[in-house]
Image 1 (cartoon, rainbow, N blue to C red):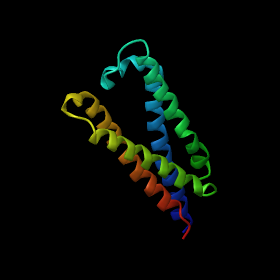
Image 2: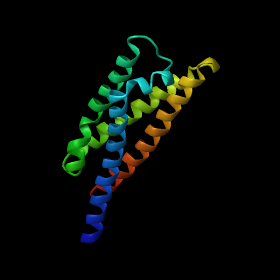
Image 3: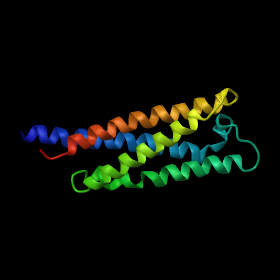
Length: 136
């Protein structure tokens, strides 16, 4: 029994850490290397890199809720619902944007589709982590 509880705790934290680390990697890449991503969003001009870097800042802010949850997933159960809600909002918003794109925006569509897949996988991992953290 103790081993099973320990395993659930470890897996829960690993799943949370995996989602957090991949989100933060994306945030850092957008913030540190914005020029690498401007073409994927068909952005140009002086503000293009600032816009991409700003997305990186927003991603980092969004992930602040993960830190206490990774450390104390059983103490901050409500944060699970917050991060799941954030993930759902991101996934729904990206899907809405994707559906509204026409064939002329194929480059943007492929970039948004990567985020849809990324956030859908993250949502599944978060739901699994929440399920594992529930006391039975």
